[in-house]
Image (tube, rainbow, N blue to C red; front, side, top):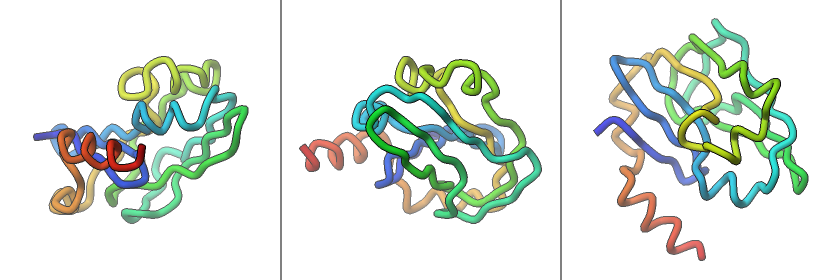
Length: 124
């Protein structure tokens, strides 16, 4: 399995030691229309659960946390021009950043897709 989910509604798709990070469709729906995304700088390092980015919507501002530890190796520059990508494709083109993982074993406590769906169903 390469896609993991957190209770804070972030997802991480891990391939060859690099995780693409974004928010889930559930989180995007809860936020409403996203109007601004503040992303981390490439080269910055974060530990799991550190605040990494901020997303602002017509409803509220929300922090995005790193689900895993590592160094930012890319950010989704398309979000600066079109933050609505987060709503249009939260688990696709609306990704936030890529993280070169410092410890892949940190994926162990994260949920797989089935567990995340069960978690979200319990929230409704």
